[in-house]
Length: 425
Image (cartoon, rainbow, N blue to C red; front, side, top):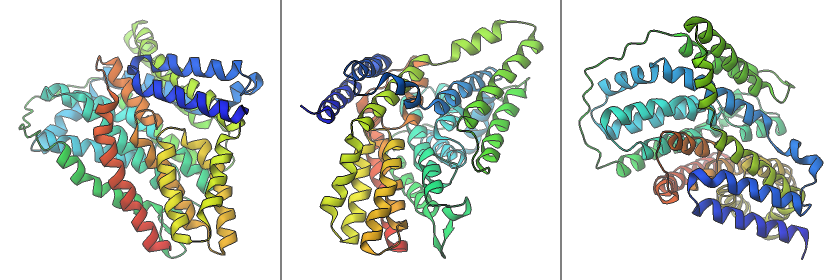
């Protein structure tokens, strides 16, 4: 049995367990799978550290600390009060939060967006005495959707922009045609009816006469500062790989020290450390190692070559294959190595067909980014959202996630798929 076959079998077994086991135990499955990959020599020991995306890990840990300070300042509750004053019922409160997270995620990493917006969702659910699980899931999938709209919204967008030499503005208007941002936003608008249907029974009136008092605005300024710093950093080419991670960590450490001095107590330091969701961080580390293993074994390369073998020279068939195979694969594998592998393949296909590659580039990005919303482990934003729910004491079943994720993904993908074809075919 070849190493590639062994790697694929182990990978499938791991994901079956990830989908079946309780969410709070998934980190153990990922780490055990990573250990097996190393024991079998599928991923060399010396490549373990490079396989882990430390930028994501640092950014996630730093943002968790900032979010803890943000929550303790009671600003999420204050924002929840404001939201409840302008929406008529629970249904529209969920939609407003989802749209808000989508807009933010177009400019800030999806995971950071979920960590920022989810506390507001929890506060709203608490005030309305409703189940927060579908609320946080809606925030996560919406964040993952619109991350593909701009150059800075998602790692896959950064990969595309770098490979195709596209600027920030090119995502909106390119060669006299609407860019991928237009397709993504149309897809986002089309998901509103989906959410309206899914939450059609949530018609309880919203009545919030209480306004939460916020006595410390520094955590809010930290949140805004992180957003601005990430946007500014995205404008520089050839910046260090860990830039975003260091930005989040510096703001978190700085904010913690400020609160320590302000309160004259070390309790705030303990609270920030306690807020770090180590289970989610370990889950991501394990997944990064496993993905590095199947990449090293040639599984992703083999999948990429299948497109060339089966797609032929039919442009519509090739475009359709790229989109929907990417949707399926990205529901189970990390889309970052997949997109990085497929970009040169897509360019080669376009060259053989004598067409511009942008149709295929956009199809790849739509499929690979949005496909992660099919399963709870298909995107880091989903993992982060479920981690927040776990820490709040709520269990998230795979079925709970897929009830929202599947219809949301299908509508968004089909809409984006159609818009890109009409504009770029």
